[in-house]
Image (cartoon, rainbow, N blue to C red; front, side, top):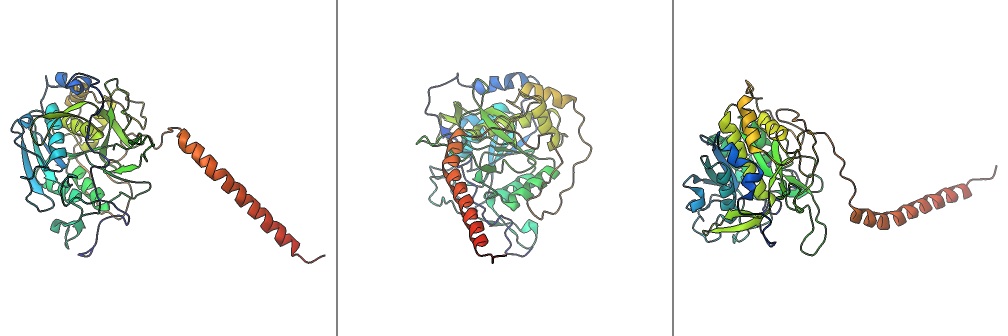
Length: 400
């Protein structure tokens, strides 16, 4: 691949907070602070492990490492934009929140932040793709910062990669072959990759149904895609609905660390993914030799609706206690699959994780009405046109 080759789809968009953003909660509290830990049985899992020996890479907007909630266990890795802006007041708003959620679940783990996206308050924030040169790929191949961040985290010894970010597209618009390739490299090295399902599964502020687009990196094979759940165990109304969703975790009214100090209450699949990354750290701490595929299967088989996958919650809400217990009883796979060359958007990774090939979710009544109103007259017009064409052809035939 040449020096100026981009490992990306032609219509790729920049990875932003849009698909996995943490949202300040506007609704009254639905549960007591810290409800998410009990909902996932994290307190019981802590009797076995608190994430000792694990490193979680948080690929986000950077981390305010001096926040008290981070317990001195968060450090900053490379800024993949090559900038030095950690002193800015907007720096690390989203990333600090995510780091806090990881450590809430796995307080003895180490968190390393890699800045791969920009906070929206960043003066250089843009919705246009940004690329960086990664010499390790050979010939100076260009990668977007997220792909480069994954490779950097793996090289630095991360056990888990947490990505509470996303972009989307109706087909493969948000797909980036460089990120897909980097995920494969991580998996081949035994690193578990977790991502948020996205927040465009409900209505926007004007009451219109959002697009519920395919969201990357959640949609890449070998990534654990996490939907957001409520205190009752149902889907949060903003959480995106797709067949690639693997599990769910709490995502509403989550008390979260602020980059400027203190806490705020937030909603989002971002928090759900970060909490899940913390659970993965617990699972890997209980059995460090587990392959990524095994970790995914353990989360799924011990979740609230194991054996009954649906595109809203995957296999259901995570049960950290059950997952840690199963991890301790699971024989680790002896070898991992070696990374392979990547030639396009084909399935790769360690094989089928048991997720069904398709699931029926019904039709959205609003779209059905719109389709009927617009589609039926069009179909009639086409049929009339065909009829006229046939009649005209017959009329031009010579008499026998």
